[in-house]
Image 1 (spheres, rainbow, N blue to C red):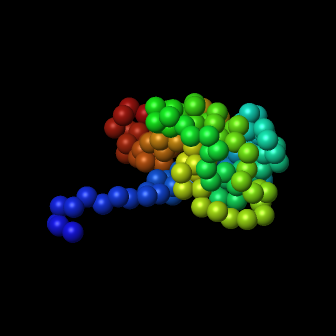
Image 2 (cartoon, one colour):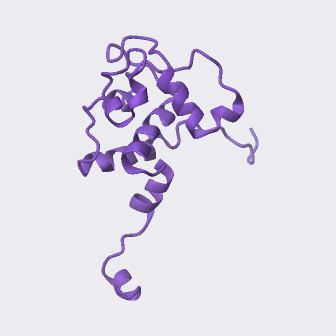
Length: 144
């Protein structure tokens, strides 16, 4: 490896996405023990009606992969991936095992976030977590 060798980094945004999910939970807008289908009705298909949000967060939903391959343009688009995961059957009985949802976790958790907050996780993170608070001197400087 050379000094300028690029490195592949996996799961770099899972922590930020989990943090975003916990903000509406802390505010009472998202119940981690409620079924995902409460927020994302299409998700209830094929044995997933009772999967609680916390099983998405903790890699226990049994949705580690898709049965049907997804073309690259769909894999990079929001709605086709959300629809594919909503239609996917769990690969094991949800809640009975743990399996790293490395390629699906972001889509699963992010769709719940989008449905609860009306924002993508990135926008929510930028507005609610990364942006400096508008209090004190900042408010006065802005005329508030």
